[in-house]
Image (cartoon, rainbow, N blue to C red; front, side, top):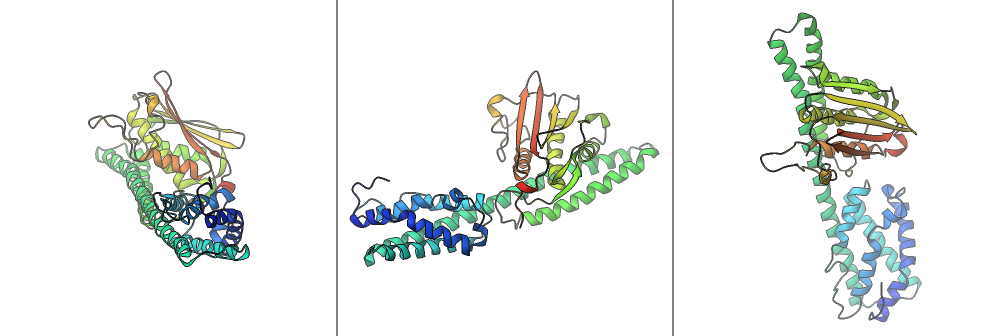
Length: 367
């Protein structure tokens, strides 16, 4: 920052900034468990700007009365802690306490003397920052829980739809040879629905940031794709087909299944009746899982928006229902250390691609 116009005390405080953060980072990594493996830029995030704001506020008659006046830098700190770490609220309070201690220690070591009024500005800045950071942190986690709960509630429609469709087929007097298969589908999807209700209850108390909690296991994604195809096409087995290679890797089967179901169900819904194709491939240690349909394309200007929470294409009378499922698909891909992309045109139809490591274990945080 530009030190012109600042008081001598403010300039002294700016001069000791690097020493304060070196001491602060050392103590935070030693005393806060969840900070030990956070990268340096993420650990500091907005705190250097907050520090500079303190220095400005120490200059008499400066427009900034304390470090949080006229800005939301402390709220941004809480936002990043919610999105980028596994912090609990008390850990944010603790790191601000350590910041206060580091500031005081370095000031003593370097002979920087503050008046009672100046210490009052430093302390009020830190106290205000704690309140604003915690307020934003808890708000973000409330939002995460609501999104996860809404996504789970939305996805419950998939197994419920299979149950209803299968029961309808039975009510019409299905071929006796198919009755055991249809009954099995009803039973399997009933169990899945029960599991998702348990996940919904977990989501309401989930408090570890926007990344999904994953339970990794080794399995063949081709088997999973065939199961999803079978369960989403009770009435017509031609609605969904699987092509490509068998790929065995480490992923979260439940979340990947839900992501694939979302893409297949929407592909059938918005396709042109020619069915949906799931393609599986592997390249350079990555598993490529795509879902294609040949329906009306998604407008290019909407390609970035469709992964936003609750976004809908079209007006009130013409809304495509991608809004809840695709943000979940994106979250699944990113939580596995990968990404999701869309390719859509009138000539080629619409393809969603989940691109994730074959072995996700190094990319997934575990306790």
